[in-house]
Length: 80
Image 1: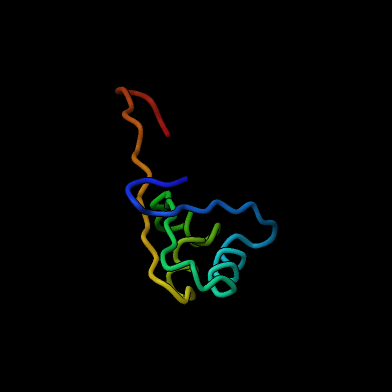
Image 2 (image 1 turned 45 degrees about the horizontal axis):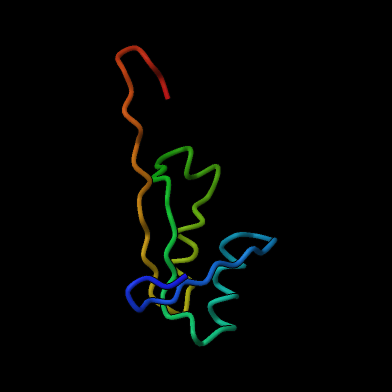
């Protein structure tokens, strides 16, 4: 996919997500930016589930752009 001169590559890999993302970026010198979404979990949820985005940001060999997933609007009385 090309948009305004930017080349975008999508990969489907198996294994620990953060490790596969970081490894792919290290193997391919053409990868100069990693863009990934984040759920914005905090507290106990983040502690129990870990954070793929955090691991990628810490260990990637190139810049990482994280995009927070918007929270859907809820009506009064609903729970997440």
